[in-house]
View (cartoon, helix red, strand yellow):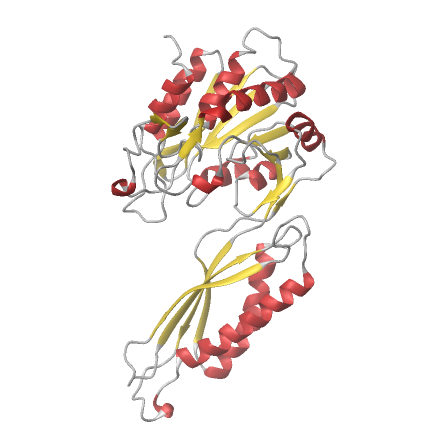
Length: 381
């Protein structure tokens, strides 16, 4: 079969809903997108592997390989999108719409648009004798659990020397981002009549001290850790929501606080969790309440690729931009765990992702194709 042109490929990918969400009500599989990509890449001569996610029959990763050898370059992206409210879109989020020199659709920039661009770049080398393999990697569930990338890292697969994550960066190379932790502190006390504090154990009183201790931790972390590569160079800790009690004349028996902590490179999520437990457990004991620290998501470690690494230098040379940092998280750390030099570099802007009328500028497409071709020449020929 004839391979569709780039815009038609993007239209067909966007027409296949592949929302991933922590809420089962919104969560969908990505298998139709994976199968569509597999058909196109097999048509081009890639060796294609579809890798089902354990315990998720409708979700899979895909690895397509052209050529062979011990090194090689991986062009990687995720096939899922965030949920959307169709009523807020000017046009259907599942129909690629061209207007104002932009391509609109859910995933156009974050990040289904990267795959047709990567395929277009790869087509240039179908008759070239690659010295190192070119791989196109498509993952599942980046927008919720990163289960696809986690599965690959645990399997030790794929093996290559370099990886480019095609998240929207405006074609500027990114070599670092902060980590992400989303945690819940849950306190269980004893309700009772508010007229006599001895009749209960207030989870809300205990949570007041917990929050004060976390504010101290935030100051301590900002004093101990600093990375000037970021616009905001220190770790952040945000109190997102709190719920507890049910009536003003009852002692609060249960309270939950949810917070977000973003560490800079050099910090480790498990060490942070251990430090938080050590600081909060004595408060719970003093108030005689049960204490639990629970992760709301597995978390993402901070990511940093060395400034003097070969891939960073090549990307800076080809783009004319110094490798920078971003605030959002990516799958880059998982590729790095597999032993690859890794950067984040792709078309589009993160500013239009995760919102109605997401779009990819037409002016980004040809430069993106040419940039990926240059990277393939550098690392595969």
